[in-house]
Image 1: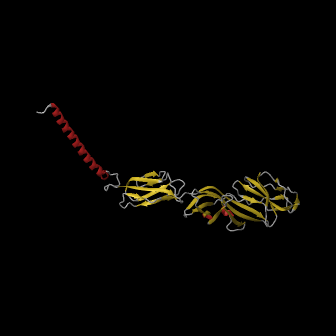
Image 2 (image 1 turned 180 degrees about the vertical axis):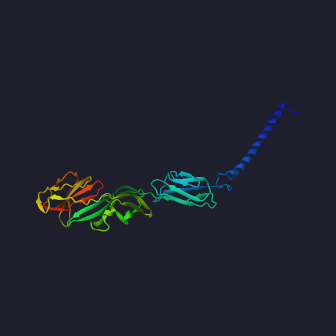
Image 3 (image 1 turned 60 degrees about the horizontal axis):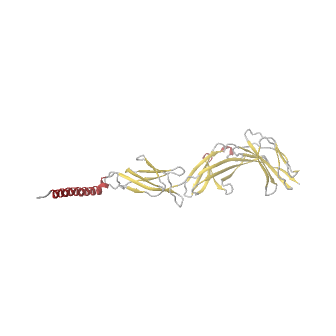
Length: 339
């Protein structure tokens, strides 16, 4: 007969064997479930029964070396899904119904782009890197006219354009000013001195065809082409005024002899709009040289004293009227000499 201690040991052994067998069965079942889990998970793109797909990719700058662009909106409109790229420029759109469509990319300051997606039974599509092109920025734009009064009662008209443009990629190829209404298109040249893209376009005399009057109020557009031939329309402006009224000088004139600091005097000018005067004195030589000028003279003034002594020689002076939009008109030249 078994004593009490032996019975207890036999009982414990039976209990431990049941626990071990239960754990073994649970482990086997868990392994089987784990192996089949991807196939059973309807959201797993590797599940052959899944009808959902995944799109992966990167967005970088167009310019070389390419840099990641964070914060780009990536939109799959088939499912009304939008996410943003991370600091590495990467994105991942998961659990998408596998319906062919277009993936859109958009970020302020960059040109938009898109790519057509054709699933063709692919559950996961790794897309090529999308390169977004930065949009140049029009920082400042001046479009104005100049009228130079010449003898024989002729007037010379010039259209001036000055555009300040910045571009983080520094890949501007060319800049144009265009006016569709006038079938007008001219390229602007970059000036390293002013840092403007500029145009000085001679529009002809008062009898020219077409007349410069046709340009008033028309829309002049600034267009940029970059080095990958992408075209950007940056902004536009209009010509506000052409100042055809002539300022009449009084003295010195007609080759009169004066002292080294002459007083330049003119008739009061009343064009009916706000403006400032600019007086300039040039040498009267084959190659004319600007010797003195004064700007921002009040429209109420009718004379100005030359502040710098002029050496002996022959000179002429002109006076400009410049309005608030930089449109301007210049008087005929008046000659004098200094002994």
